[in-house]
Length: 259
Ligand SMILES: NC(=O)c1ccc[n+]([C@@H]2O[C@H](COP(=O)([O-])OP(=O)(O)OC[C@H]3O[C@@H](n4cnc5c(N)ncnc54)[C@H](OP(=O)(O)O)[C@@H]3O)[C@@H](O)[C@H]2O)c1
Image 1 (cartoon, protein in one colour):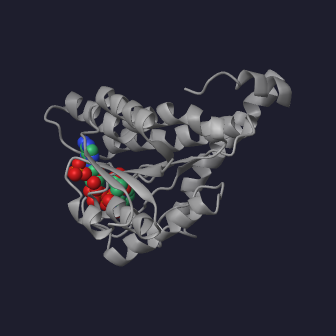
Image 2 (image 1 turned 45 degrees about the horizontal axis):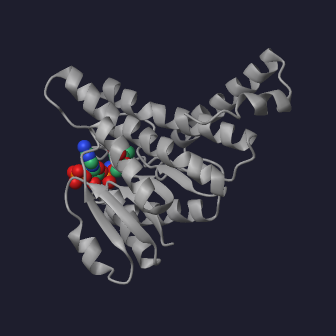
């Protein structure tokens, strides 16, 4: 059976580049965004590309879509590049729609595919949607983005305790050029570079978080982002110590189905 990689945000700057690179590597794709991605489909006639127009602001329909894709196709990985921040009118609707798009819809895809991936002992989820930082509406922006690194780290721990080879990554794009951030497109040469780095990170089965940024790499900001992930690991270790769990007890605790 043919395998497909799901790429969300394919009509965007980063997701578009990721999709083109994957297609040029011969990967079959399922693209998801509200706009059409006809130029990507037309450019790669030798691979199977299914272009789906869908609004990820609605978590219920996202869960439904993920279930449908799971029934119809053999999915080998999910790369979530959609995001940003949209004003949905009043503040409550804005929170709802951005939380849905940036986190809940992503988690819905994880929820639908994780058991299948665990069953096959391979598969990956990548969120490229930042871990937070300065953005328009800074406080709310962090509310949508921060959960991505926490869910990633928690799932990673749980998967490793279960001995699974399934990978979950938070590989944030991080632009430190004033006026870039979520407002302006990342420069073309950086997008290609980051997309390549992200794909080889996943293909090489690397375990650690990678920051998709030339400016952040080896900088104190990059280190602090990695520290968020590390502190989650330390908390988990300390909790285990506090409960006095053996590895076996921890494994049993995490053996129930994920999410
Ligand atoms: N640019 C930066 O410097 C930077 C820095 C840090 C983090 N990031 C994050 O990295 C991710 C990708 O960045 P980018 O520069 O590629 O952004 P982009 O060019 O604005 O692309 C965003 C993508 O998300 C899709 N999208 C937005 N709302 C959607 C919705 N409700 N339903 C379905 N799809 C939706 C858009 O597709 P449609 O409009 O067609 O639906 C588009 O394909 C974003 O999460 C962004 O916040 C970017």
